[in-house]
Amino acid sequence: MTHTFATAGVAAAIAVTLQNLKTGNPSTFHIGESWQLTITGPPNKAVYIHAMQNGADLGSSFLGTTNASGTLNVFGTMSSDAQLGSWVETYTVGGVQWSNQLTFSVLP
Image (cartoon, rainbow, N blue to C red; front, side, top):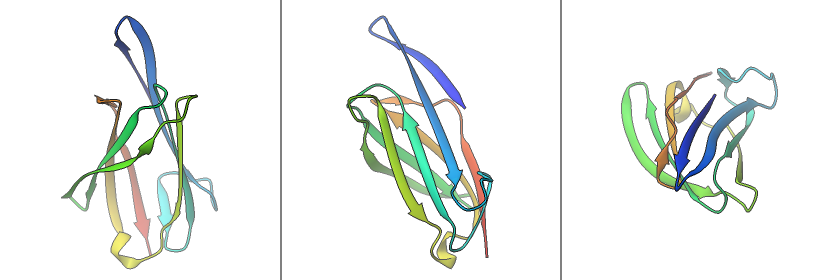
């Protein structure tokens, strides 16, 4: 999903991609499966994630900073039962909120 916005007369795009590195299915994960999250947008900007799990608001947290090319890659593993359930995530890059949502499920 991609959202385009304008800042100071310059068009920039925010794109968020989640990959399941085992199955390739970005909408369903199982405990033990690894993932890659790629966020692209303006270069050298702070990236924040706002997450909801099973309808509970988990709040926002700093995820990292895009590099000089405007990319931030984050890797991880669905590693515990605490991650089970339905997830909805939104992202903010450089103070601009991505207009879409990332949704996925984590199963046992």
